[in-house]
Image (cartoon, rainbow, N blue to C red):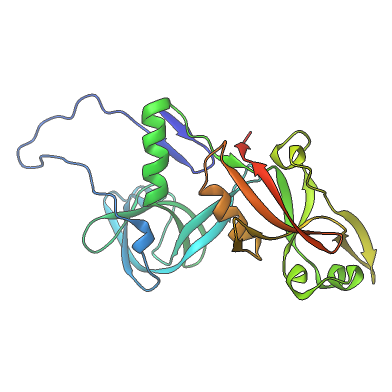
Length: 249
């Protein structure tokens, strides 16, 4: 019915299921992934290397991870697990011990490091695809990096600004460009290239935020067209700027 490349989710419509009174197939229940906690025991089911019906066990290693995608954007609030994930069970469910789906396994990052798209995002994306054939992600239209200590010293930043996130690039005609955000310039300090003199984000909507992951996660939780209030430092002055979120291109 459709798919979303950024969250790596597609929806298939099955027109008929052969009836078998011994099987009586029914869909697995999606859990509330906001209740998932590190240390929770989980199971991954799939066919790794073509070995059909394999089950691997692990724990939730962490929640709230941010995972870069091949398109240059990031996927937020991803579940990290040490359950073995290999070609063939990536795309299968990550299950709680009660048999509820807490995520869809997406990738294997290395030995004992795998990632799973949380079920709450799965539900949101799938519902939108079923209704409209697509899912639209909110978009701020910037590239950003946490402030480098050399940049903080060069600019004489306050403690709060020094712990913020520098806007290093503003996409032309994007939401942040239309709101007047200022991108940094690159400068070599003590032999190291760093970004200086750009807007520095320290919060959104009265919530303090000092990492790129926090900002990405918050923006991804909003819908295109919503207006957010960025709290920024510009030329040493703390101000607020309203940005109307766009649709990720």
